[in-house]
Image 1: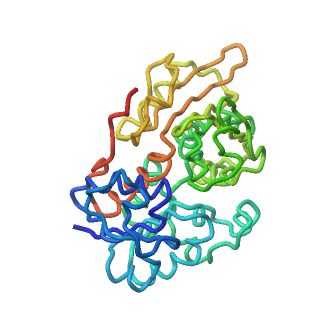
Image 2: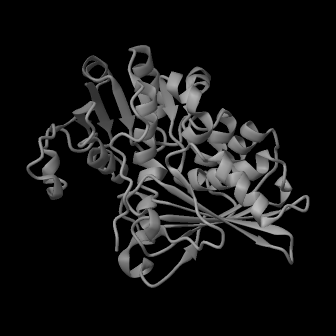
Length: 346
């Protein structure tokens, strides 16, 4: 059994980590950390876990964390992991960071897009980008994982096969993304106030969302093709789910069947990517509560443009589920262990 600690346990990703890990046969939820709720019982904040044998919340103490845990999940806001992860790594603790602190190779880009001081270059170099379908061998050997963002997870899984095959013009890529409100976190603000959000949809951070350089970086690293993408996120009045629609111009005369076969062969052995049959129109409900990313491919022959649809649950495959998937690979467990595979429906 491996002892697991969760920093930021009272956030949505932290709560989801507990839901998944509670039924994991190879780990014990040993420690829960919160900077604002030290000493309190977890069930006082989340009554739905009443009766479960969970540890009380405690303050963040790197010495104690290293002494009692084999791996720490950092489900924290940006800016925390940059200083905490190097301390934990030096003490021999594995880390899966769910924030954006370790995802960007360039400290300058991080400072530009996140408006915070970046992590040190040493920890940035040691962190492995945890997109298992494309970085599995590196994840298995890693001590520190930069867990991908929710939007990048869906976007990259849908774009990488066709871009790596060199079948599209990288400069033509446009991504339209829509997310449920849980992606904004548990904090209270006017933007997520019920009466402001309900019965409405709106774009936000147009041309300036912090996940944009992450997507561009990983497309470049995996395909060798550097090009800016147009990424526009939208907030929709639902709790969970992301739908991304990526558009790109084909560079040749590939048929829809050709593209379908490319994706089916690329993800044939990946347990959490489902390439749906030709003509499929996806719903976020299809993956609600699961660690799946579903992909559907369409071709507009009139414009010679491919349209790639992807759906994930932003709290699972877009955060906690993918983090556990990475943990499983890091410890040599079966990749699917404890991860939900049947959607909540309706």
